[in-house]
Image (cartoon, rainbow, N blue to C red):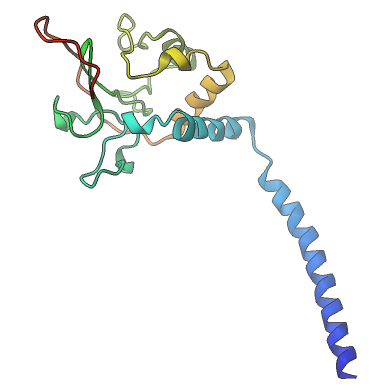
Length: 186
């Protein structure tokens, strides 16, 4: 009798679990139904954070050497002046360049750019609306990014539009003095 009760309880539990599993599986399917915009943001997040690691150059470091998430993609801190040490300034053969703010802040970032301006900047290496005659300096890998499919560039754009805006105006590049040797060091 006791054995029959245990078997019946196990069969009932298994039936209940399988019924719950079917019900939950339908809910799980709902998790994978993204809108077109959500898909682009998620794809862009992957490209920005994993493939191209944009935050490595465009996000200042904290004192302990970690990316400062409160200033994610905000570029070289204006409060640091033109000094290095925060991972966002680079000595290049052309002089010292500073990672710009690529958050959607309308005054100091790319918030006043439209998608076509962003695509043009990434594919031609020429800045957007705020400096249309200025080239994007290396170490920005625009020479390789320009070959991305337009869908990927637009996905990056969608993600950048979704990050929190951070007000921070990075300094302008400092040209290399003519008497200094060219370097490629950071």
